[in-house]
Image 1: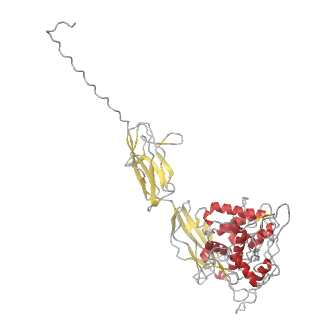
Image 2: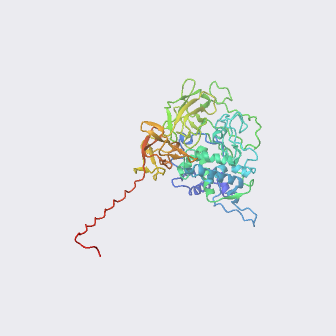
Length: 589
């Protein structure tokens, strides 16, 4: 590949030394901690994620071949002006067909809303789209974004590639014997079955549509709550798409190139890649999941001619004689998946969680042969069934995990949705129809164990008036705010009689009439519950308001209705009596 890269970078320069220097120059713009070795390959201390992080060693594409063409070293130039009407060096390389570019940007916008913490850049989708299909073969798509002809990878029959037997009965790839990567983002059918999205709003999830495929790729890259602005998570996400360090290197060079600038070009005018990972230099990249002790046969160096699948599977090439005793010539040795007889529950504990919480226990399945021997390197698919909003962390209903050396696959943690009740998760072997395992989980309603009034001021009102202060309470569960907890509020008859009173304080219904029992109340994100305005009728006295939450937390609030106090009039002072008349005095003048 290095010689090809050098040839593309500078006409007439074909030495591997120049090619290595070119890759090193491209890598220099990458994140700190990413270095290049003497062959120009990117290296990091944790470049290869664990099987749990990739969830599927075969990735989104089944580790199908990809285009190895690399961008020119010079920064992308702006598009030529309309006045010149001519192309210039580097313009087509940096240009992305209009419909394809629009699909990438729409997918980024959708993920910004749905998964803001993922920080998915559309340039990453463009880089993967370039490597997987040359931007849908240079933008050869119709107005709705569907490719003018299917884009299919080679059949994954283990003959130089991964071995993935048919999982869709040829529905997506037209091959009922083996799977093939499909569409501009090259999803294998088993991955598309759960990762597929409707990106253009036509009600279909079509891997051959760039809008659907770009949105699906975005969700796939964000499915483990990775932050793609962090180089470590970015590496893990890219490797989960195609588990190859060379693939990671190639995608990163295009990502950095597009980050420095790109522009829109007309559909159908993009540059078609020339070199693939399974051709050109003659190198066949081995699948990480199907190691071989002998060289893999070299596949055809010509990419498959595009065309509508005929519905009949292409005839697989017979592999070379393995030479093993008792094996007829042309019979491939069994894969680990072929040896699986059944799945067993590997000690999963009781699965129970409150709505909105993450289950503390995780499901685990063990792949076994007929004799009970553990089978490693087998893909196990865990699927959440039925009408439920419970998902795996990351929001997906399906997770595929590769069994470890003990034959055990541990599913990602489940996150309980808001729908309460039973949840069923089915574990199956990818590519085989054998006995699986059904796990039963339970989602319980949100509860509170403590409920207290937030204020201590006495609640009083005059007959026929309204209470000046609202009733506010705070619910907690194990010391933390209990949000979205259901509650009721009832003006009870007495401390010993929980029935609703027929007199005294009341709430108003939608029709303005008195209501003395409320249901359907819910605490807010901080566990607070603020009750509606309270009013009083003409009855005076002391009344009780009882508030209860799911989980049994209860508080009783006292309400007083009394007539307003009036001031008594001041007593009048009697006038002093007149002195008696003097009898000796004469008549008044």
